[in-house]
Image 1: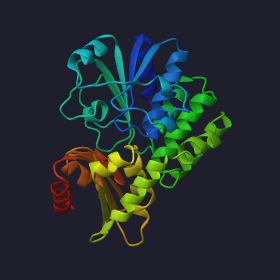
Image 2: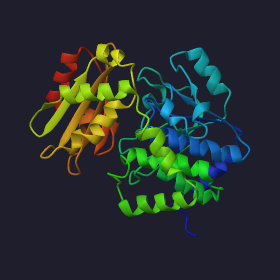
Image 3: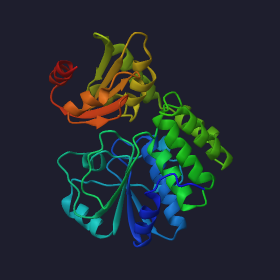
Image 4: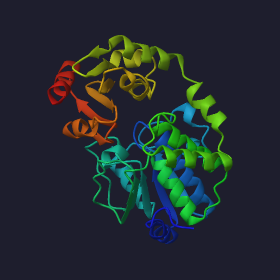
Length: 327
C-alpha cells in the first residue's frame, strides 16, 4: 500500500525515541484543532507514550464528547516560569494546526522556549522555522486529514473514538462538508472513517444541536450589526456585548462561515469581536476566487485562501478603519 506522506516514517522514527510528549490545541480552539490533537493523543497513548494536551483557552463544553478533550490542560503561556517548567518536563512538542507560535501560545508576545518541535499543519501561511521536522500539506482540507493519512501510514489501530475525532476535525474545517478543498479526497476519508466507527450522529448532536442561548443571541447581534461594502460585508461586536451573553466561543467563526460568504454577489465577509478590552479577533471568509489570507497577513495574521484570521489591538473605530484601508 503506498504511503500517504513520505514524511510519516521519519516522524514516527522521531516519536519512538521520546516518551514524554506534548501536543497543543491552538488558541480559540476549533473542531479541527481539538479533533486532530485528540486523535493523535489517543494513537500515541496506544503506543505507550506519556502524552499531555495543552491549550491557552478553555475547550468548549460541546467539544468534550471527543475522547481526550476533557484532559486538555488550560495553560497560561504568559507565566514564563511555569512555561519553562512545562517545556522541561517533555522531550518533544507536536504542534498541530498552527501556522505560527502565537497560535500556540495565544499571544505574539510569547515565544516558546527551546524544545524539539514537529509541525503538522495545512495552513498556507505557515511560517515556522524552529522545528526538527515538518509535515505541511496545504492541499488538505483539515489538519485532521493529514493526521488520518499519517496514522494509516503508521498502521495504527484506528478505532471508533479516533475516527470520531478525525471526522469531527474534517467536518469543522470544511463547515460540515460545504467547502472541502478536494471533495473526492474528503468524502473518501469520511466514508472510511464512518466504516471505522466514527459517530457522526454524536458529532451533530453535540456540536450543532447543543448551542447555548447566549451563543445564538450573540450570533443575532452579528447579523443585526452587519454592514455592506463594495463586494464585501462586515460586522463587529464589542466587549460589553460579548460579556453580556456569557463570552461564548466560536460565534465569530460560525457567522463568517455560515452567513457572510454565502451572500449573493458578495466576495468575502469580515467578522470582528472584542474578546478582551482593546483586543479584537477577526475572521475573514471568502468565495473561491478571493484570497483573504493576503488581507490577514497584512494585519499580522494568516490562514487559508478562503478562510483566514488576525488579532488587532485598538478601539473599535480604529480597528474597523485599519481593516477598511487594507481592503
